Structures are given as C-alpha cells and as structure tokens.
Image 1 (cartoon, one colour):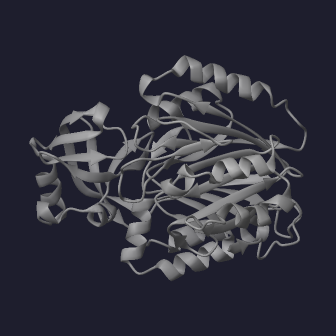
Image 2 (cartoon, rainbow, N blue to C red):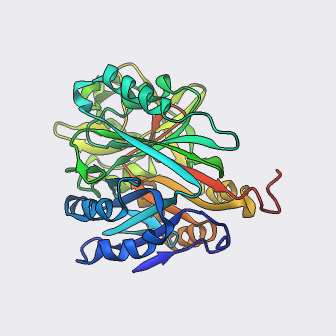
Amino acid sequence: MATYGMKAKAAVSGAPVVVSAPGASGDCAERLLAALGPASPAAVLLFGPPEALAQDLPKQLSAALGPSCQVIGCSSAGEFAFNGYCDEMVVAVGFPASRFRADAIWLRNLRSMSVLDWIDALRDLRARFAPAPGRTCFGLLLIDGLCQQEELVVATVDATLPQLLVLGGSAGDGLRFGRTRLVLNGESQPESAIFCLFETDFAIEEVIFDHFSPTSTRMVVTDAKPQERLILSINDEPAAEEYARLIGVEPEDLNPRTFARHPLLARIGGQHHVRAISEVAPGGALRLMSAIEPGVMLTLGCADDLTHGLESCLSRLGSRSVMILAFDCVLRRLALEQAGLQDTVARLYRHYNVAGFNTYGEQHGGVHVNQTFVGLAFLDPGSGDAAR
C-alpha cells in the first residue's frame, strides 16, 4: 500500500487524506480503509480502472464507513496521488468530517436529457446546506465521459447553482474508450453523472492551466454531426485528411499522441478552449471529446512549455496549500510522457500535494474543456504567507 500524507502540512488537522492501492489486489478495500477509517471522513472520492470499481470495492468501503460518509467514484484514464502518474491503481481521497460536510446525488439518464429532474434534484440538495459563517461551499461533478452530454450537464448545473464554484472531470476508460463507470454509496448507474456538494472551513482556490497558444492556422468546420461530436469535413475537405495536411503528417499517422501535440482551439467568451480529438472515425471523420457545430471557426494550437506554466500556477499558492484535488486530461498526460517529463510531473505533484485522475474532459467555470489541468486547492489560513 502507498499512503500519502500531507508531506509539508502534516500538522494541519482535518486535511484531506490521500491513499492508493493496486486495484487488482484482493485486499484493496482493507488497505484503503486502514488509512481512511481513522479520519472519519464525511466523503471519499475513488478513482481507478473500470474493473476495480466494477467489483465489490465501493460497496465494501460504503458499508465499512457507514451512512454518514458519501462514497463517490468514477473510472479513469489514469490516476495520480502525489507521486506522479500511475495506472491500474485505486486512488482514494478522504475528507474528514471535522472540516468537511458533503452530500451527493445522481443526475441520471444523460442521453434522455432529463433536465427538469436534474434541476429539481440540484435545488433540493442546495437547500439542505444552509449558509454557515466561516464556511465555504463548492461542487464536484463527475460525468460519464462517453455519453457526450457534458456541455448540457455543466450548463444545467451552472444555471441552477450560478454562484457556486463547481469543478469536475469526465470519467474515462484508459485509451480504450469502451465503458466508463460511476458509483455512489455502492450503487452504479450507466450513462449518468454525480454531483457532490461540499462545505468546508478550509479556504479554497481554483488552479486552471492549459499549455497551448493559438497559431495563425485557422480552419472552418464545413460539415459535422453535433450529436456524435463528429467533424466530417474541414475547409470542404475530408476532415482527417485536411487536419493531417495542416499539421504536416500523413493521415495514416494520426493517433492520440499526434492529437495531443496538435489540438484544435475554439474561441469561447474571449478565450481559446481546446476541442480535443479522440480518434479518426470510420470514413475519415474526426471524433472530438467536446461538442462541435458546422460553421465553427477553429484554430490550430501550438504547445507551450508543458510544466513551467503549471509550476508557476502552483507556486502562487506558496505554502498555503495542504492538498490540490485535480482533474487532468489524458491527452495532456500523453504529451507529458512523450516529452519525457514524468519525473518533473512527479516532483510537482509531490511538492504541492496533488492527487486526482486523468479524464476525458474537464469542467470549470460553467464550461466543458479538454487538455486542461483543473484543480481545487485547499488552503491553510494559518500559514505564514496566507495573505496575498
């Protein structure tokens, strides 16, 4: 078992507890509970391969921790727990009840677009959290990353709870893109999302970073299937062929690592957001990990430094951060690994206590994005550099 404490903040009472264990081990639940149980958590987040979450692990944790603890989980495209990227591990984050309160709900049937049901459930959940002096609320959103409904879910949550800070990630299945899994208190629901509302007396702060800048290369989506997130043609040419020409490779050489290096950017609200490509679909179409419409102008992205910008974002927190819960796109991970920067990532995650999972997409600020590091830092107000 690998148990990770608050290396630089071990004395901070009630700080989140992070632990990881091999997902295939028969005693995974026992290993996780050995670290989580003493913290008396109000909530536990689980991230791991679909196979691990499909077993009895979530039910065992939920039964052992009791009804006062929300056990929430989703499958991932990789995990990380302070020591950099890992695979086939289960990462658990426990939020001690001494500093956190939590409650969670299902947003079911994503493909049927049950928006009114979601709104009612979200309002009922928010009503259970009366304003408390000295405490802050935030929301975490985990969404099936294969249902292609993230934009609708994120927009619904943002419109229903407009003053609430909400972050999240899309559940994954490695690079297989086969089946994702979400669990809540031992129950699993297909094609759904989980929204968890937290209250804490820790100060919190977003950490958002992507490593792309727009180039001068622009293109127009001339044909698309929005419901399937497919670009059929770019500049009136077959999509995969035209994209390959623009980035200077042969169509047969397109793969996830190529997509990670050359993303498409869409300008939304005055900012460029990545519209990541997941695969070349049959017939030469490009399948995206975000919504796309015919007529949209896209810009080819150019990779900036993969780690220096992130380190700059993290360093602004100083010694105030006791832990950063993060959602980091699997395509960012591929780019970092291809550049041989795994050790640099491990150093940063160790130093700043970063834990979370690799996603099929990230949510923040009421939008669904790709190839972005989205983090939530829990800050120690007693730190010497707490005043900024």
